[in-house]
Image (cartoon, rainbow, N blue to C red; front, side, top):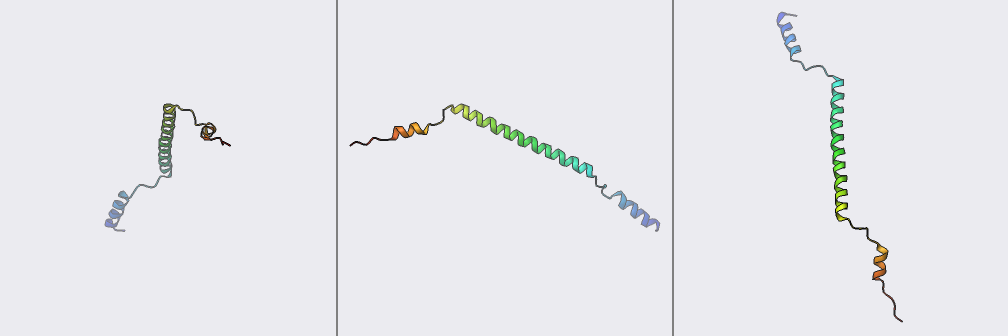
Length: 78
């Protein structure tokens, strides 16, 4: 190789991207998954709290359908 070829090869190696690091990629994926998990867990917790708050605010007993049907029934007259 000539001096110019060596300089070009050195310059290309200097500007080359760094080698891939599989452990870095795995750690990055783990961190992103943890963030997703935390976000989803907080959303689920907030939803549960909202449902409890609404149900506590309503504070009505469940409807008894049998009592409602008896009140609506009519007696036959002969």
